Length: 325
Image (tube, rainbow, N blue to C red):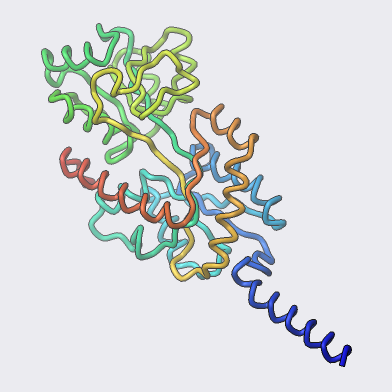
């Protein structure tokens, strides 16, 4: 009898472990996981993906590989992941400027931000700073608005292309303040920065790391951070709300998504591992040093956030009238 009870207990334990296994993600991952980045090495998405990969390799006890698939404004990478096997081994490190802006700008995408992807986790948010050349006779955002109203179209602002965050941000600033500025698109950030420093360009909306050195040396002037809070790299620069323009918030973000149909157990396992990494001191410190914030959201919250961001940017782009030719 004792032997029978012992076997029954052992069987019950085995069945219990089998039942608990999928919910806990047991067995996943059993091979390398790939994070696909919709940009070339060296940018914010690449930085985020590699920072995540370092931590996830330890958290998942499997190699996490970063694969860069640049091109077509991020659509190549998004389409590739959307069509990948939904097994949790191919993930997209989506950038907000691609994931919730492209569906508004492009008419015929081969992927959908909601229907093609299962949300996994938000990882990093990145505020934008409004900077001007020293030749522009303004020292505050209010002064910029007054000057732009008195000189419609005379202020040139740079971007790294039509439909980018820099382009949308500057147009949204103009829309919210009733001012008109002239867009000058560039093929890369380097040329835009050169012309901003030389005075050929008056204004740029970008992330703090791109300009903090110039701001500290006095080569450029920061007017406001387009976010809800000031940034530690630029503690004396007010937010747009503090500067009198509360409706201009331009936080970019990076989040992990899996192909739709990925097992929930794999998504939960990934989300738990990402949470451990993003909330670690090392991740937070390195993110802040890069001018960003470590910001975690789980699958459900990220799903709601994605939908709200789609509406926000759809409304913003619709109001500005930006179109990709």
